[in-house]
Image (cartoon, rainbow, N blue to C red; front, side, top):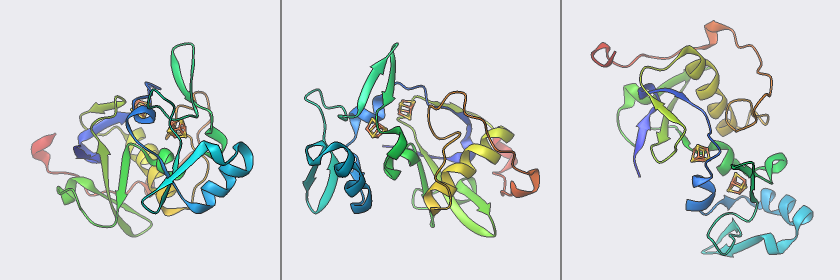
Length: 180
Ligand code: SF4
Ligand code: SF4
């Protein structure tokens, strides 16, 4: 698994390929588990090694994954676990995967280190567009911080209107010019 610093990514958009809902086991918090069990029953989850997970179907995919018009969609969209909301992004307090300058994102005076899982099919590599930096990355950070519940860029919710974010709030330290 390779984690790419966000400043090497031009843009990202979920293509609803379903890979992440098939390849990974989703860990849910106790609060998320309670909500899912209340609405869908305890048989939709499993436990193991002290953690709670969403149950998988016999083909290995998440039991909430369904297909519509060749798109893989989430049946748990309205109470999607945070792990799913954040994928394929990692928002960390430290540069765990290296390239500290390229992973750095400063928001509200706080320093974050943001990486993208290279297994995702929605990544377009290159110099970050303003839209990606100011809206998409910011949204993932806010979800990770717990200050945002609504998703505009971090899901395949096609057609959802986006809030306008003032340019001043987009405050990052650029990666070296060598890469531009
Ligand atoms: S997040 Fe990436 S891997 Fe998952 S469905 Fe979207 S494009 Fe595919
Ligand atoms: S809850 Fe939704 S997004 Fe998460 S793995 Fe299942 S189908 Fe995919």
